[in-house]
Amino acid sequence: MAVSQNKPLPKNIKYGIVLDAGSSHTNLYVYAWPAEKENDTGVVHQVEVCKVEGLGISGYSQDTEKAGLSLQQCMKRAQEVVPEQQHGETPVYLGATAGMRLLSLQNRSIADRVLSAVEKMLHSSPFNFQGARVISGQEEGAYGWITINYLLGNFRQPGWLNFLPHLRSSRGTSGALDLGGASTQITFVPDQEPIESQENSLHFRLYGKNYNVYTHSFLCYGKDQALRLKLASDLQASSTRNGSLLDPCFHPGYLRIMNISDLYTNPCIANGEQQLPFTQLHLQGNGDYQRCRMTIQKIFNTSHCPYSSCSFNGIFLPPLQGEFGAFSAFYFVMNFLNLTTEKNPVPLDKVTSTVERFCSRPWHEVKAEFPKIKEKYLSEYCFSGTYILSLLENGYGFTTEKWQSIQFLGKIGSSDAGWTLGYMLNLTNMIPAEKPPTRPLSHASYVGLMVFCSLVLVAVLLLGWLTFHKPKCLQKGLI
Ligand SMILES: O=P(O)(O)OP(=O)(O)OP(=O)(O)OC[C@H]1O[C@@H](n2cnc3c(O)ncnc32)[C@H](O)[C@@H]1O
Ligand SMILES: [Ca+2]
Picture 1 (cartoon, rainbow, N blue to C red):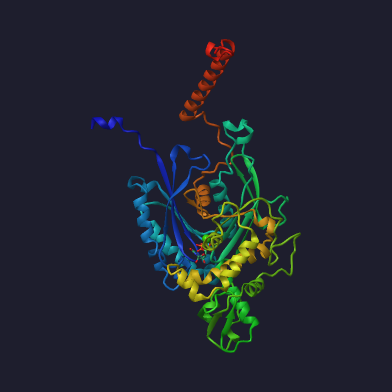
Picture 2: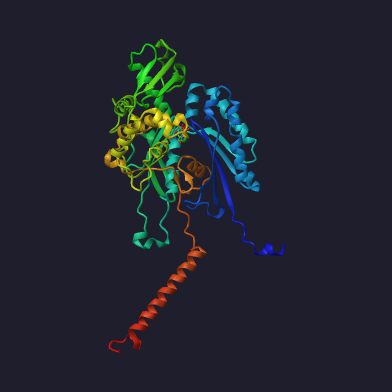
């Protein structure tokens, strides 16, 4: 036991857990940070992500208990990641997004039962359960924006090296674009002030600085619900008598059969089912990007705008400003199409031609090339790529030039881009409103600075000595 004296003291690490209960699935994130640096920027980072098997919690409306049980495996994983003696002090939060917002609109009591089932499960875990709730679209946008700016270091205050002009950070904040399965969010700091519409306006004071942020969450415009909107609009425009539809957003040779009742089961699609003389929809792909884009265009209503400028459906959108980070399905789809790998953003015309070429490829060929990718994902990359272009170009007005300011992000460092980190930082009060007092230099920086100064001093002395006492060997004409 005597040797244990020489062991370095263990670092005091704290942990926090957030479950992102999305419309398509649930992810559990474990975050960690050194306890003594709690209020610094950029110290909290993701140490684990666990993907919950099966459906998103809103998918268990027929058997609500299963929503709770589905989380068991990832909760076990979290118990392995967080040291046992810290389980009791580690907070756990669950935030549900658009899938649960839709279920609440459709049937409030079932949605409450789903939430109770997940609460019961999380209460029974050894962690410090802090609540499960449906977060608003505004919160989802805001926390996504906080997450990426925290991770990108954009809230960082000038440090002691900032007297050197080339090291001074002049960066502002980055906008956040999030594409989920059931909703999509756009959040950024506009130039224009004040923000014309109250419900799209947020105010933050972070690390001593004020931020006026624009945000909007479009319910039903996540990529799964957008596909439903598009199909419902196609059906309305078609004169099919047997439910067969040619779909330009799927590959030539692709066939999908859907129950009409599944299409009309949520509040995104207003009634219309009753008039149809068939119960199934037979979709037949023909991979025509231009036509696909035209059919998607119909789900964006741009006929009215009660503000100085709008995105679509009469929703206020100020002029786009600054850089944007685009994550979740924006990233999954662009990454699959190899459009995120280059250092500089891929130009809009190259993105368009890549999606166009991909859509035109026969389904059997695509399937043979990517046998390991889930068929649900693979079959929808053509639609999703086209939808992303429609949403960003036509919906939000990203022009060829503005497109260059979008960066598609999966992770920033070890952490996934998404709303969960911002949510936890806020609920644990880890983002102070005021700038924390600057701490004295750390030991390492102090030693570094001393060594640097000593070297400069030695160099100056040597130079002086050489100048005034030129050694004989350096004097001209000696040889
Ligand atoms: O935010 P909400 O709307 O509640 O939805 P979500 O949280 O479940 O949405 P995700 O960002 O997890 O996923 C967005 C969509 O991308 C799909 N998706 C997830 N992983 C993917 C991958 O690797 N390739 C293609 N699509 C993927 C998923 O099925 C959804 O349709
Ligand atoms: Ca999401």
